[in-house]
Length: 148
Image 1 (cartoon, rainbow, N blue to C red):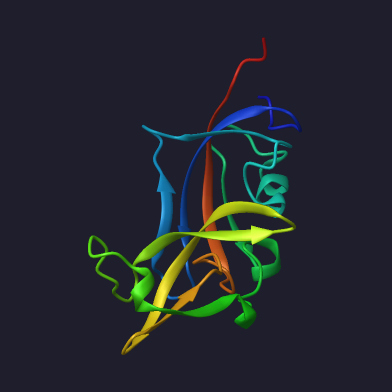
Image 2 (image 1 turned 180 degrees about the vertical axis):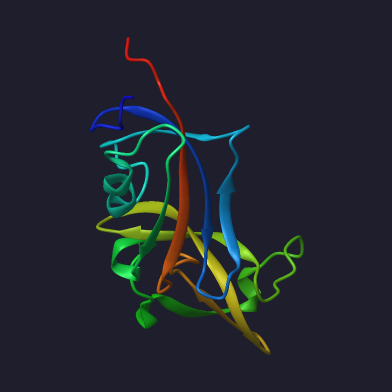
């Protein structure tokens, strides 16, 4: 039986959980995620854990924050005035916005989550929602795609 190698395209089913058991992502055997090992489509530690696995094999992989979405960084929060919102957007805690940011003269849209509303001041967090969390993946190899 063949095993997953670097540059293989594989179909995986998985469940990703936080330490509290909350599922943050999943894919089933019926609708697996297709990834090519080495293309950085998954966190590197997770990709490397797949190498050597056989079809039908299952593995539990725990990623520390540095191996996943990085540590939570306090300097990635910002307080903005509620007046920047037009009447179509009703700000509330948990709302994910796409805000314009400039870095080295280039403007890009960055997701930000509203984490606090205090009167006319709204605090947004630019950290990835999974930053700072240990992530536990239970991964199963559904199939290894044929190479052309």
